[in-house]
Length: 212
Image 1: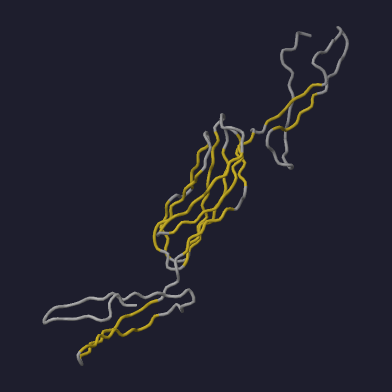
Image 2: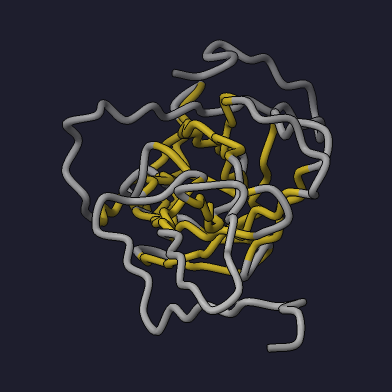
């Protein structure tokens, strides 16, 4: 549509009108040769205009996991897929919102340039301090650029660090001189662990034994 389609000119004056073109989502991605014509008082002038219909620019971010478990005093990583499409051109910036106190975030790449269709694997590292609260928190991951913004959500769970718990069958042994006594030592993995967690090469020591 034209901003003005009936104009008046006096002598050597000039007038302007703005042409606005709007493409439907189903418009063909093609190049067309347009002709712009102005007529009045039996006069006519035509000039060419090239129209290129482009695919709309797109931006998305997806997570490979729904939950990130981070043990106190340790770090964990997750991979996110950032994709651009259409006539996208510009930088992509990544951000994390909702981090609880004691947890920090770092991206393997936080700002990068992309043109057209592209796919990027970005690693997010979350580090929890030893004093971070044991809790679950909803995080929002955002990719922004070229006037677009995309988001995805994950859950951060700060958990107890894994460790070994040692239990003895008795807290005291009454051992007679020249005699023998036994105590059974049992160990187990504690903290947030997976079902297939393993302990390899576990050894036992007894310290502070009296002479003899």
